[in-house]
Length: 450
Ligand code: ADP
Ligand code: MG
Image (tube, rainbow, N blue to C red; front, side):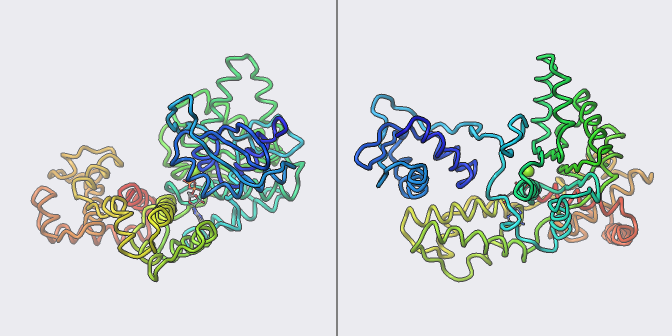
């Protein structure tokens, strides 16, 4: 094989299989020889070899052939010299995604699977999707920045990558830079260290579109925030599109400078809501198509997807993980996917989801959220700054657990059940008109249910 051909194919494979699969299954492969149409690789274990043979050898072979190599089949052998363990690399050696013209952009790799095509739209993410689509059309920024926020695994990164793909495909010359806030900080610190801060500034100010993922990361990191703020302003002044994501609304990010918060709020702030049943089912139906291709011949009984969509309500990543495991397990044991098999295979996932939320947990979270003492929350004080959080905790206890009003009353310092009922009602009424309170409730609900 020509020198570098395998290297080139590996890079193609990142796009095909995604970076996690790449890091787990492709990166550890050591190409050894190609002779008489047989490409040989060393693998860490035989299980590993079998798995790659079964799941990736077609793709690897196809790519090798496309790269002009004469390959009929692949063989995987355990490295004889070493009893090397299969160590999962912490970061895949993926090359930054960028257009051919701007090799200098220090972006993060884009996941080829995160496209608009593969994004399932439902009520909870409708607006985020529409806004992302609008940004992906390019042209003059209609809102700047686009600020996407929501809990883990709800599709923020997916949407950002989709925007980048779309823009880059439509205009390969456009300088689109996607990176995480952590990487932004890392670059910044590196530039400071190497005394290249002018280059850093110039680089970040020269992009057409800047996307910074998980911006909550820079909270509390003062000089990084400062630099981010200036970069942000410089780009907005030039009317360059900015897309930001975070795990919560700008105003909710602790230790983020006020001027940054208010800048973030100048554009369009969009919330990705927790998934609902229809969306989860839609996502599963879409993903299952992919697995049907991968594991041809594997049978799946009726009602499985519905069952998963009902039971796994946390986030899409967990949902996907469950499906991956299910198919891998079923193919390994050679069984049809039935509800029994689901129970066997996903016992641990389903069990942790059954975990009952306790009133104590709710009280602790609420106390923390409003910075009041837990003892005050359940105690007798009537000041409004304590009474309101207390009612919030009552309301959440009533709506998120199956405890009765008298039981809840007991946990709130022995209050009467009518007091609890009153508190719950009060919060219900208020949250209909008080946007701040409605936000608080949503945030609390989200963090309690994760
Ligand atoms: P976040 O960045 O919000 O934590 P991600 O964008 O990383 O979440 O999404 C987690 C996983 O769930 C990804 O594999 C993504 O493709 C998938 N996912 C999330 N939302 C959707 C959706 N609406 N349609 C299809 N896949 C989704
Ligand atoms: Mg993300």
